[in-house]
Amino acid sequence: MRSFGNAFDQATRNMGRGQGGPRRRYGQMGGADRWGRPPGGDVPPFGTYRWSGTDGNGRAWNPDMQDYKAESQGSSRYGYSNAQQSPVLYGSTTGTKAGGIVMIAAGGSIALIFLILFLASCIASLPESPGALWIMRAVFGLFTAASGMITGWGIKLLKQVGRFKNYSRRIAGREYCNISEIGSNSGKSIKFVTKDLERMISKGWFRQGHMDGEKKCLILSNRAYEEYLQIETRRQQSKAEEPVKKEEKTQENTKEKEAKNEKLAPEVQKIIDQGDAFIRKIHECNEAIPGEEISAKISRMEMLVDRIFDRVEENPQSVSDIRKLMEYYLPTTIKLLEAYEQLDRQPVDGENIQTAKREIEATLDTLNTAFEKLLDDLFQDTMWDVSSDISVLNTMLAQEGLKEDGMKK
Image (cartoon, rainbow, N blue to C red):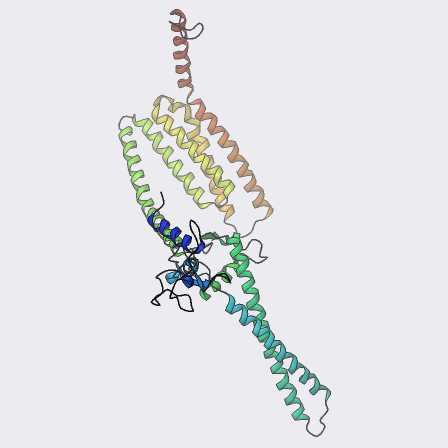
């Protein structure tokens, strides 16, 4: 069902266009003046007049023109249109473009004139007053240079307007866009494009333009910028709360370990404490050694060793299986990591240093493989228990006749 406003607009258009009935002309009404206004001279509160052709005696009522006027006069206060309530994101560059053209034309003309005068002064000879000749040449040369600078500035403005149009096409109506994407086809560096966009924002070409905190994204509307600020505020709050949550998690884990430790034998607890010390040392070395590749290897080693001691804590009977790990493998691992850390701090990167670092990196791979195998071996008892349970289950199912052709009763 149409709303009252739509029905009213349609009825008004029918009156002007002849839809649903004959065209009405105020000029044909009795007593209409020469302008086609109705008797009394009052103009109706909507619509406008237009010439209806030679077959009429006046001007036909045309509500379309009033509609167009109402749409075209939508206020743009605060950068928003009353008609659509959508942000006006781009300013006009017509004035800048016109100014650039004028500067090029005026500067070029003046530069050409003074260049001709300068060349003429160079050709002319004034033996009576050579000083005056040099002064004349200097004046003409300065004016030529100044005019050339004006021309160059005009060219610069036109190029900037062209880049603005290119940036706008790349943005394609979005309210935010990465600067790397905006300048992808400009042939300019990201640094240049960022500075260029900042200048355009200051000139008002991006009417509601903003940069994000890292200057990696152009935000074109105040609405999107407010959303960005809210997200950034939440991110900063979450970042500030992260150490607190981490500390709470650490305290919780410590309490859980202490509760478990009360149930462990003293000799097992001693092994667990030594293992925790080795894990902390591995983590410290990882923090001190830069490089993504070796850091990934050390992180995996830290995880494997931590899982090994978690398994020993769950199954204290397996503490004898990690005797060599405690007496040799882990101390040697710490020694290698400390050596790598020392080599990496050296101001030079000679052949011997590079060779030693490569050998340590390869050894870390070997140790990780060994630790994986050791962790798997610690679950051998579990595997035996599972296999035994499955064997008994299959036997019972077969005895009850439930295994053949699936589980049938």
